[in-house]
Image (cartoon, rainbow, N blue to C red; front, side, top):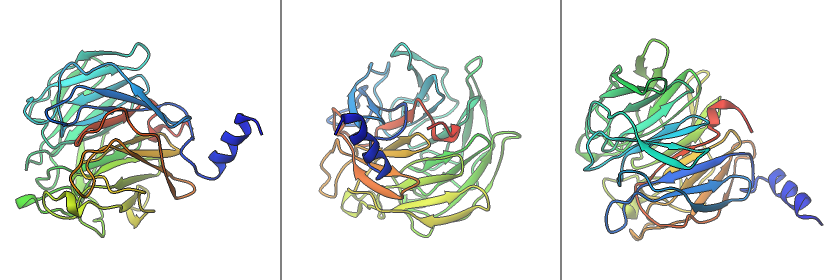
Length: 307
């Protein structure tokens, strides 16, 4: 059988070789802050090295459009942002945010990136791609650290993370880009922090992380879904491996959860690939580096609906 038909059969079965574009993983920690990047191709499940970020960082966040990825540097590196241009594989400094990007989450559409939460703050910043301007947004309903975010072209859902005392929480908030409004959303059933998120135009998928305070041993396989229409939550299919301090990105067909630490607090390079339609999970190709607390974004963001 030809490789084309083998690939088509794998796609139909919900294997990790699905859709167009790349997931771009960047930064993280392994003996020190990293500026490494990896380009994970959805159609082949193969990761290769990308261009290094201009600043090393970890425990930040990333989002972007079909043309650029926007990274917030994370712990110890202030409010810096970095722009990764997919077509040329070049990186450049972006406009700094107005507050520290340690432990933030990020989401957005084709016009804006919204960075929210962080080291026990509810602060939100809105980065407008046209002109590379930054302005304060409407704060989250509560201070939240090490949370995750996913959304579509109109709203972003900030969910889970750590509340006071680093205790994982179940809360969510709904950020509407038009009007910059922020209201409480439907709570998840399970409290998790240090998780990742990705999704489609209709739902966000939140997965991995830890169910206990600062604990790799409590790393989870759990995924939870947030459906934008009706603001309903549910439980998805478990990941194929526990990922503490994981990053996630995807297109509208699959989400890729990658890197982090296993339950023994060992840095990992493995990926778990979630097929949204099949609700199936497979192991994808390893990244070329292992680290905890990297960030990830996509050249074909799931909110676009492009397969």
